[in-house]
Length: 429
Image (cartoon, rainbow, N blue to C red; front, side, top):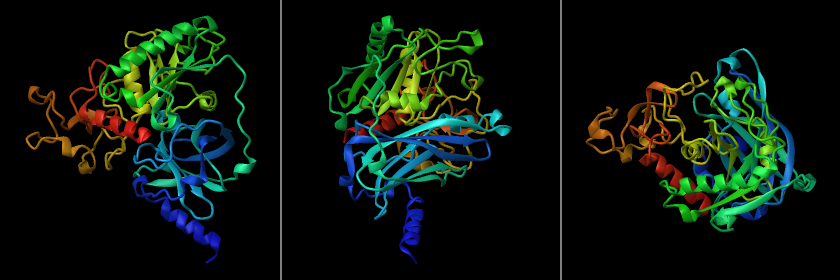
């Protein structure tokens, strides 16, 4: 068997294991002061999908450390590996989710195909490497979607577009390698409104750190703002016929859900964020209308002027930063057949009871029945309550109420709090 065949065989075996089984052997092969930003396209429909490389970028900031290279979490509908081309050592591994995966579960995806932008980021390799992107199958396994040879000497340093951009720390200190770094980007604020953006970002940050577990983790975070003026003030709202020219092209009515606020300009979002350290991007949109969205290791987006904007921030970064699933099942969504009831969902706060030992069984008191009825006795208990992940039956959540279930809830449940804490400790180790 030739060297090439042996390499492919080793790689094939490697990609069947979980992140927890990977061992980082050569962190010195990465430049931890620079980032490789990969722009690609996800395309397809409900039945099939493919990934196609568009562009490789070298950014001059990487915010992680040598201890944050192999994710301990099995979160996300996709994952990617940076692998040494000669030794097959895994240098970096992460999971992520996408807007495309959500669209694939809509009824539209059953009769047409579409393409979505996607970006992933990793520390810059010093030597030739292989980038492998995988997608999660219906049964929870992964299949390879894209493999690219990365030759560092042929990737130019990215030069940010010259525009009015101001990065400012509004909480914490400048220690990107040892902090969980949140970057709040302005959207839909005119030049004269950027001071308003800063004030709103500070107020929402106060809300964040007045809520557990973030309150106890406050010292582990740095929060930065990135102020960029938009040509017009506000946000596009197709239902009302209100069209705005904004920097990140955000809009309501994603997938025909009025409150679902998103931007399809993923490449632009990550290119914009490349001038600052970040572990998670938050887009703050200048609007009083209720709306937002959060996607794991992608970004979170929300309106700034609604009376529930603070709760929206907590909920959406629960998705985008913490990897948490929605615990509600009775609101309008565009998704159909979102969760496979025959396997455990990857979201840490949802279970089908197929393999509950891997979830929060250890947190449930022996006296608490499983499933747990919604009774006064268990209102403040960690249990197994039916309804979650947009499904009323046979999907279960950990608490009667939680910010991931209802924005009226004052706290995160025990399971969600523990998950957010674990993610934060990973970024700060």
